[in-house]
Image 1: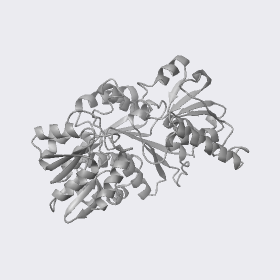
Image 2 (image 1 turned 60 degrees about the vertical axis):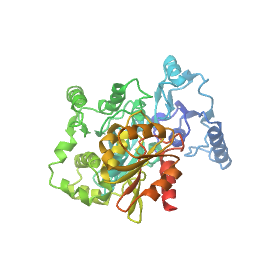
Image 3 (image 1 turned 135 degrees about the vertical axis):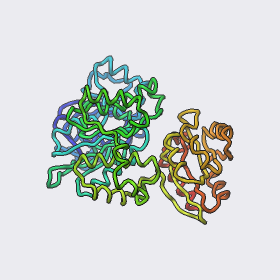
Length: 462
């Protein structure tokens, strides 16, 4: 795990004990800090108590420990505790600071609220030589993060990915540099994580795009965009900033570019127009997991990032070709009787679903869940590809109404089981049954992964 002497002797409160919270508790305790932990779910707290007790029974309290069973771990309801006792409060990114009372109580107590990525930023001075790439944006973050990590691995550059993807960053072992003295941490960063970060000075910061999302957490779209921009604002002037959004949203990019050049001084690359003329861009059909126009953004960002890390074109292109793609993102599940079944459960808003609709010419579209707005958004531009739509979940009736108004054929199915069964029965050879819900999953599933896993099982049982 990643630890730091800088944490020793301090008292941290950790609110939220899911994966990143548990990793934070363990890293802080192993660093010699005192930790008071809490979660709104009593079962989660009890599980941590039991884990600590078991570790103590195994003798883990003798000397420094990398287990949860150390004398520095306490439990207290942080909704009631005296927050002035703590040096910092570390919260899970999912905690809605715009609504949760701990935000106001922390301000009154004069105690900072941070996240695990900020702890990583503060530990960097004690890590072996390395660079950090930070990737944010509304859509494409996971693909771009995984692609950059894959290219670096292909090129023999030590790297790991974390943040909003994979293992929590503090749970991972520090990188050992290669013979050139370089290791690269590749971090996917949501706006929520950036909000909890103060000092992450990325060697390369990437902003893919910004479209309306998470507006329940922000006053307006401008506030959401400003959160993304902070990734650049934390950079020192000698660092690199990359965006793929300038040509699509020139108005806000113009202001951002001015800010970067005058206040930060970072080198700004608008990746897409620079990438498109390169002689190998017409080889995109050779990259099976990077199909579709939307992936041009992701590929361009990955190319310029790896180029800035001195990876040569041959290794970058090899990485494009061998990239396996991500689960739940335009994931080809199976072909049955000439019908392709594709799992795009990670498309939790309309802008994320639109590229999948665009990528397949004849689509049986499974759509719905917990919608983030009452609009078809960019999916409306590709309804000519939709043979029929099969609506599910809480937002099913809304999507049915909007789609019928747009002239689409719609079947209201309510559940994923019904939608897969009906779409499979209706489909013809050459068509694609596409789960690309344009909605969050929380009305019927734990998360988008659970929804995609269910789709995979249903398709496999056909």
